[in-house]
Amino acid sequence: MLYREAGQFKSTYAQDQQIFPIRQDRIAIALLLVFAFVAVPLIGDQYWLSALITPFLIFALAALGLNILTGYAGQLSLGTAAFMAVGAFMTYNFVLRLPWLGIIPSMILAGLCAAAVGIVFGLPSLRIKGFYLAVATLACQFFVLWALQRFPWFTNHSSSGVITAQQIVIFGVAFDTPAEKYLFTLAVVVVMALLAKNLMRSETGRAFMAVRDMDVAASVVGIPMMQTKLLAFAISSFYCGVAGALHAFCYLGTVEPEAYTLDLSFRILFMIIIGGVGSILGSFLGAAFITLFPIFLNIASGWLSHALGVEFSHAAVSNLELIIFGGLIICFLIAEPNPAVVGPSVHHGFFWRVWIALYAGGFVALAIALLARETRLLAKTTLKALPWAAAIAVTQAILVP
Image (cartoon, rainbow, N blue to C red; front, side):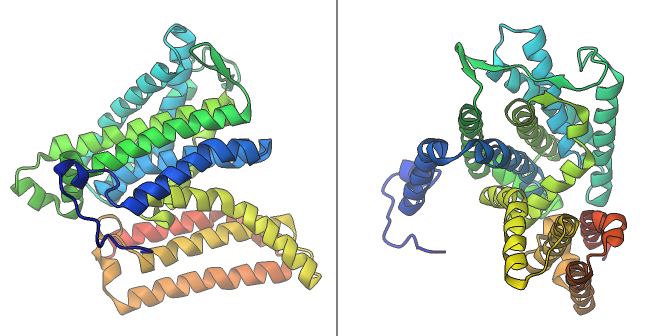
């Protein structure tokens, strides 16, 4: 906390109910938006805009949707990529079959389709929770990809399954350049992030957090479980659907099922774990880390190679990235656990903490060995599974009593 609210007194209810009640927050957000909308398109080149900043914003929006469901409502989900796929393919079909509709209404309708799918696969949350709910949403991931590949209507009967996304046109203005696509993505993300910030201050957001903290107590005080949980799935899936549409139209330029695999779901889950579960800002921080860290690692390896006179292979650097991701996820689970997500067992037990510390230490030791010996065979066979090992650690944190 760099500043305090001391001395900023509110004299009206409107002032007290502002989205950003602290003056420093309002100034910082205003300066950040001006920099993002004005300075970034001017100083950013094509690579930074199209390959780094635009995907960062899209993944931040998807992480924000998952954070609403997992961080605020306490419902685990491993089907984020499936909801993104629904949003991408339905936006493509709405633009293709209803060309008079426009891209923005098509994205909204695609988000509603993703929300409908989220409600269907959120029904098990009324009876199960925790690890078992995560497995139920995992079924959504496989079912959606199977449906997109088996029913040719979604791909407009394309033989390859890879289709080119249509051009983004709004009021006759085409968004073709990386800067224009970046501005379009930024505008959508800013609006939806502000809506999410406002939602968490509302009665609905407080109901989400009550269900997350203790669903039995929330039910006793009159919060409807079915309506609250299904609404959380619907809102989260809507955000992920819009993120999927932006991912296809503003980043990839194509619509294909292979872009929305289970690996993407785990990457978005890692974003909210690293950035902060139950935090809107954490969604952006986690997305920035996952997106920009590989670039930093490549630069750092170049510096080390020049300073030490040792050449690091690209395989070693890429696998070191996986090692650090897995180790950081485990460390964050130790340092900043959320009882609603990883269970209360993380708060207790000396041996549990020692076990995870040794687990993370093993990652570090393996990273050092990889850089020293450049064991490419080990990198190909073992290290690619390290993010999955981190996911198993999350599952163990849920299951250990």
